[in-house]
Length: 160
Image 1 (cartoon, one colour):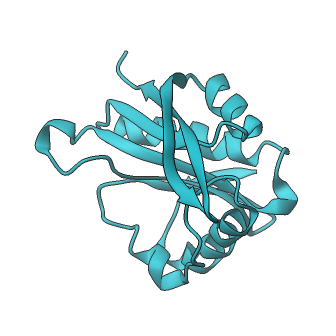
Image 2: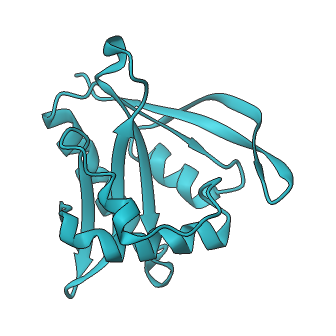
């Protein structure tokens, strides 16, 4: 599995992977499938996105996005990781997130944050193994399919 920076050309495959995550209801509050054009909107020139390829196919991606618009938070990024169903639990998510951590640090970010559904044990184990710590729980943070869902708040400091 080979990580690399994502390009706009990768958007269709990234959208397909993200849509699997939406369908599975284990990683996002989103319910509307995303198009390649939606994913192209994630490329803002500031926030890195990494894909992982195996045999020419994108099997996972990790992305960063704006945490808050205020200047004092400019070095903090939201992070997300998605893996194609058939490649889950094979290390693709680890490769993507590990590379993204390095790239984000090189780009001057000092912290990565995210929120994870409590029952998503695989994601929680992955992020913990890469140095993220759980800092709390937002209770009833969002409504998904008519059910209030909690999320675990996680962070990873990038400063030495």
